[in-house]
Length: 207
Image 1: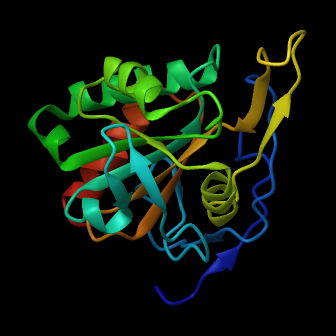
Image 2 (image 1 turned 180 degrees about the horizontal axis):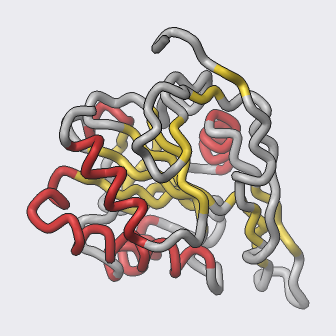
């Protein structure tokens, strides 16, 4: 029954990046068992992760409502990330190619968890390099903390040898919203493009 939801603890599903470790808290994730055709985790009816208010790399303030009518893929990362972030964006760029004309109905958003270094200017050079339709999103530290809390994304500085040469441990996974603005999917890192393309086609078909 569509109105019945089961709550699962998905500690193995959330990826924590250092950028290479696994783990995070998802004790409030609500799954819908009704749709078994998705290859990624169906989180229809999720009790959190409803919205955000951040500035894109062009300087425009954005919320989820701005992208209504498109499927939205939301990923948290930072531009100095050596592996998980660039490989995820490259993977999503491949997804866009696989979608063909339907790619114009998808919006990929890269939310930085490193507002100290990732200015709008930095994001404008980094994010669209993977696909010109991708948008980098940034807020001040308070806004970053707020959106991370809203999506239950973990991030924490990992000190380097010099003060400005730090890394960031962070959740390495993505959320997907359908064209009606409802959160629908949780995508684990490292699956490859095909499962994501498969699921986006389902969402774009109106499922």
